[in-house]
Image (cartoon, rainbow, N blue to C red; front, side, top):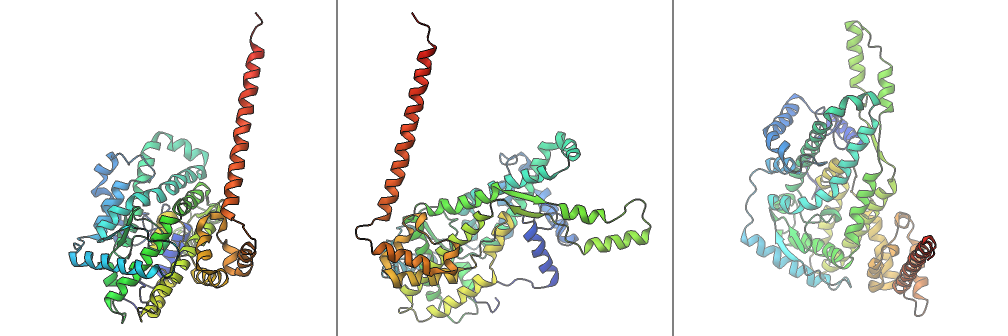
Length: 471
């Protein structure tokens, strides 16, 4: 455990920094730079990955998911190999989680108008986390993988597309396995280090469950001078607060998932810089010395493709949503616990360091989906929620979650005054109910659409009568 509190230790050398840079441009490692590709790492890593792939190739190639964008059977197998033998969850840990969530819920009632979620508390080990969260990971990863495959095919020269035609089925299976390897490695690492079912605001646990991983929490807490029970109650409070949001803000989870899907739909791959770099080299019978120089020059270049999305606004919306979720959680958990648990301030600081240094949760998600979900403006979001509460009270603060159109946008995190002024103006209007006004607008639009459909059907009926021959 390093000195970063909740943070996790990662090797810190130039090679790893270069690997991270390459992964940012090629999040799936498809072209050789990522953790799941075949071009990064040393010979040992390459052989290890290839061995993992061959060990399950027969079953994986014939599995029902082999033809999809991601071979999830292979992903689950590799993740279990990464996890190893997970210790069974003790009954004492289950009891401690249940009691800690119950206590946290009582305290949260004093800090928010949103009622308890009523979700079932569960204590998981790493393997249970993998099994229970895989369905949501499928929702998040599948659209990105599918659009990534399409973008790569569109980027190929026409001659290469023609040559690949007869092998398209095999190439799809290999691509599916490659994504499966990438996802399996990421989920295996994440399963050993995540602390709850919704770390950093991403709801990957099944609906109706508030999950805590006691073994992971104990490992992450080493080096902190904080009683274990206080640490457990703090993490349970964060999980319970998020679950209140996910239960009573019904549009929130779908908005998070749709942001990922929208990002995926606009994926683009740019390899022009690779073509320009290769064009500088003359490959017609170069002498050995010149060939050696060319290889040295190539090693110093970034030859990974540049991956972007036409729908960059979806990434901004996702980051803002995650910041608003975690900022709200920061505020209500601190208010609920600060006078009851003396170490709340110290734990908050450790949590902020974990977030700032980038835990495995963000890195794993970035690897498999290509989006950083570290929500860099959580501190600004926390301050925004605090100022909203001061201006209009707790009830109006929590009512901001009633409709997605009410939420602050990215610009409001940097300049909250205008957003708060808008809330104050609404409060000064006697009898003004924004939800009712939105419902009226939606009903009006639905009625207008219904009238248009009726008019169209009537026109079609008249046209049909005109076509009938006279008797």
